[in-house]
Image (cartoon, rainbow, N blue to C red; front, side):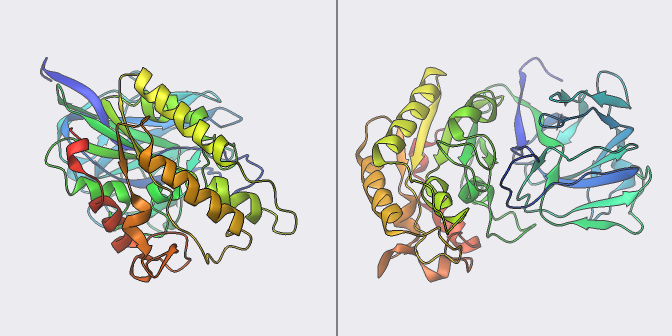
Length: 384
């Protein structure tokens, strides 16, 4: 390790509580099982360290063994690259409820796009896992401690979520800059092809010559109200400002503030936020980012008319979206604006996603849609 290096975020996975009243997908627990999860790096360096989280757990989390290796395919690993992970010098350890941990460094060159397989053995009942909703990557679980196994016999596929992992840091050259994609499902990647590296931050990374973007989106997340995950202003410090190496925050919020109040209980919809309330929230978010010395880039709220989710689309919500988007485009509180709505809307009906960019539910973008979203970013504003 050189003296001209710094630890920066090489991969991130925003976590939320499994004990929320309203869940898109439930979490789960593990007992006497190895969980192997694939983590694809957004940027590289000369060493890595893994971040684990029991932030929202209600009981201690015991990790009996942890190993890191390069993934080959599926749940297979290159056994020659497999190394034991230690935390504070211990290969087995316990995280108290609410606690997070960072592994000791694993020295070795890694690059953007590398696929690492993290294998964690849980000897006791973990309780419901602190997790990420839409991982866009399949994980695997198998009985017993098989953390070192080149392949997992009788592996169960974990299709949607990621468990107990909040990120990877990489030891990169001093001055390496990182942007945080902070937002909802349009950041996290709902609607894109799992395992295809096709989420908005992934697509944007393909355009960058230096620096990179990490993903801190949570599907269903809102700007103003706790519902699926803590609301944006509550988690801003942890999930954006405190990310090591961060220089820019790119955000997309508002869809769920306008749609969720009607979809949670369509028979008894809740009040929508006003234009003024959303503007106040965006303004406060920008103020806090600037106070931390970072650049903030706003995204207009994407279209969602005709979505299949009952109660989500409403005339009132559409009207608020139009007014808020006009404010975002002309406001002087951001360093830059990416007009996502204009990039992906159907010119024949701007309230709807262009069919070629629609994943099929009329709310989320497909792979082509996230590519168009990334193409709308003016790279001159993203000086990494």
